[in-house]
Length: 173
Image (tube, rainbow, N blue to C red; front, side, top):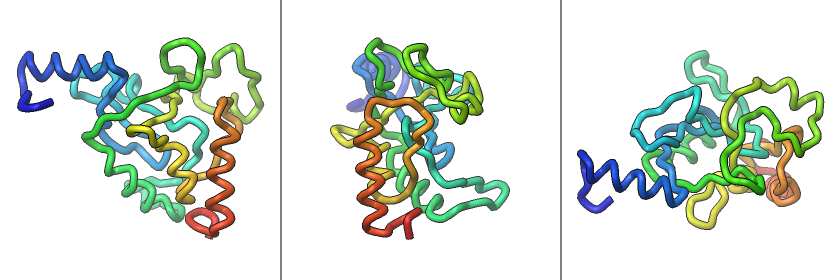
């Protein structure tokens, strides 16, 4: 953003990045969910700008109530490195636009999937450069594959999970 700290210049720069498919990460909601500034206004609207990492199910992390399954705290700390940075989002569909937990009509829906909250977070792959955050979480053993959510990269995600399982790291210790 090269010296654009406020005013119209900053807004224009943020809008340009958003048009290029780059979005600022505002925070980590939990192990598999990020707060992302999708409308480039600098604020987080939990109802509209929550992004759940597609194909990933993280261990429980609830700091307020003192609930944390291992290695959820490590995973959240790892995700914190992206706060304030820019990411690209890919919803794994052929047409543009992110989709919510309501499944798109072209996918078969399992009973487990229907139990997820409708109208919930956006589901997407999150990229920093060429690295997919979703896959990295699985590779490090910080999460499991969420198989009940339809996604085209399920095989790739399962392979990353299998590597962590073979190493006996994270959730596989």
